[in-house]
Length: 284
Image 1: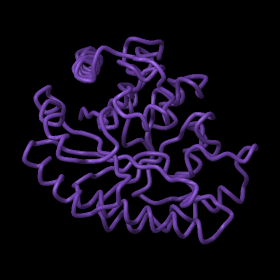
Image 2: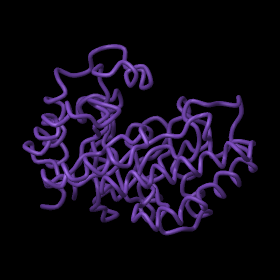
Image 3: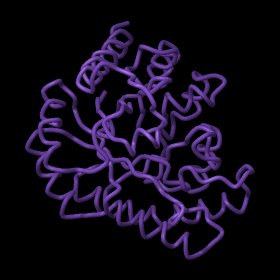
Image 4: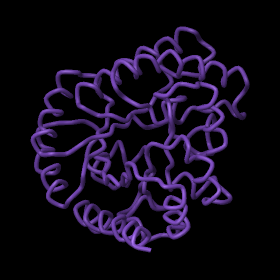
């Protein structure tokens, strides 16, 4: 298993002040970090790729699409902007040495029509992602499509919908991820969900029901880790948690109160939590 930590706990962009943070993450024993790519600056990400190499930290990446570059927009020009934004994001991944790009790359986050997804939107989304997939192939990056809960998007909100989307795109560089936070809201049976997602899953987000320290809430952790073991999952397991360090991120993730003692405590406890669960099952 590869253990990572999403840097959105501290930052929404890479900057020099982050160096002590990633050094502490390495010292704790993480294998890698998940870097936010919202700023499409290749030289910046190339410099950070060298820094991460120097520290011995591998990386995945996360991004989002917004109203102006919505892959399922009825506007052809907006969909074209989505293709362009995704290609530029993939170039930044390549520059940073990130091999997986996750996030809600299928549609604009926080945008709603007042109804569920239409077949036209599904076709537009598949077509847009297919255009991006070849660029992902050239960049050496796998896109891990992330479904979100119904309060954050309306297009993909379950494993079943995401599997249908992945199968329709039908490209080896377009896979999916499983996020315990969203699954806790949307899936009736997490064991069945993990089993259905398994053939397409390249990344798992470990996230508590309140976005705090994994193991301190009510996510079905035993069922989750049992199911991951049963399907033979042995890829990236990345902690995604959010706090109050960044007002913009706190507002976007609806974090209105202090959820944990400190970011460093969350990082340490989360790694110990994942390792303990995995070790227990691999020992049996």
